[in-house]
Image (cartoon, rainbow, N blue to C red; front, side, top):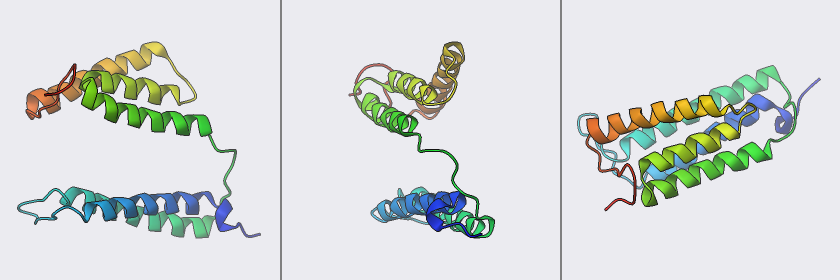
Length: 151
């Protein structure tokens, strides 16, 4: 019994990985690559995209062997909520600062899952926000505003 490619979960997952990697590679081509000694702004996106394409190809090949079917239905609510979380993060980073952006990202993302526990999400948000501020703002000195719009 054969499974059509449109119903093969590993093939579809690999196709998604390869597509996202291809988009990233295309976008990364607009930036200078540099060299291993002096990496340009396009270095990391291109390398990461190439790795993602490689994972996609391996996953698609595995799917051709396994023939495992997709089980269940599309989770439209989590998909929309996760997309909204990323958009909110980007907008809030620019207009409200890093801490509000992280709070929105963590709470919206957690709410998209099967279990939402307010206490756990709050602890995770506080710890990760402090860690992000410590690493990016205080440790690396990046010019991110913690609260309020950046200058």
